[in-house]
Length: 414
Image (cartoon, rainbow, N blue to C red; front, side):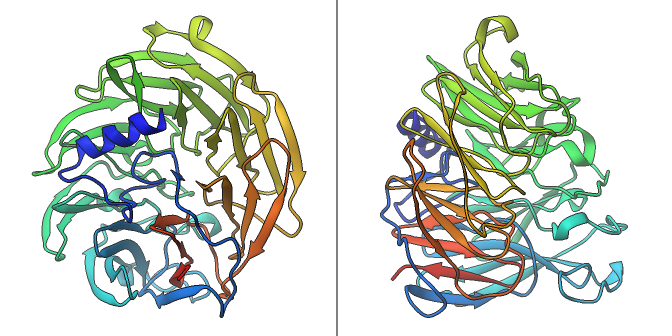
């Protein structure tokens, strides 16, 4: 399934993804999986290719296309570690860096629509949604300020309004490209899922009542059919990505909001989230209410924030507050191990899976490397020595790892 989804993503873009590309949240196919051999050990001095200070904070993941790294950030208001400031000083930014050297090529400012959320809890800020890119454009989502498209040189091409509601947790869902459409989960801003034309930003379709959903939609293949899968409060939805028409829905049995993104493998969507966290597996390809026919299992284990990865019949994730790594059998949902990672701290960013190893980012800047096997093995815990808040998920480019804090981007691996 991972190969199928990767091929699907290549078809949706205007050019095939290079081995060094990481074009969206959780990679080119949304699985956060790569065959690249990444470093397992590094520190502030060793195995660091470059490190670049950013003009502002943020929790979005860097994306890579060709020779460029793109990342969003904000400055002037509610920046962690700085005085609160005034809303009038809030600035939103898109930055482009040189992929090889980390040199900051340029920063483009986006005027924030005010008033914004006065305080956003836990330092999430105003640049939490990961951008996405194709061969011609870079697309950014800044909550109530809207969706903004730039060309690769930084020229502003279009802006789309997707709602103006606010939330104490801020916005977080990232963007997805598919077949000339930009999929935007604006659950916070308007409880609506939008599909926008990538060339113009004009609305093609929308789906209402997308309630308490902070996760990024994913694509799934069900026979000859491609589905768009999204978790909302109490439900998992399967939609036609061309029209937004609902194909199926499944009860989750999980209360409250859904933050972690779904991972799809071998025709099954694996979902965790809620408060208290739980999980379930749903076979894609159904019709109507598939709770009784396609829901394969449910579980009372999961994560409130961080997304899972799938490898060789097992699901892996970390809890956000309990310093615990989980492994579950993907066929049954049964927890295979539940192991404490010493001094792991909080984990908000989502892991990546590379060459049989899982890279878990903790909020204190450490990255914990765990073997992707149904027996817990902590390979290493690493830091690049920066103090700050690390809420972003890692990105992979070639044999290097891009790590982003609220102050800088660090490229690990030489």
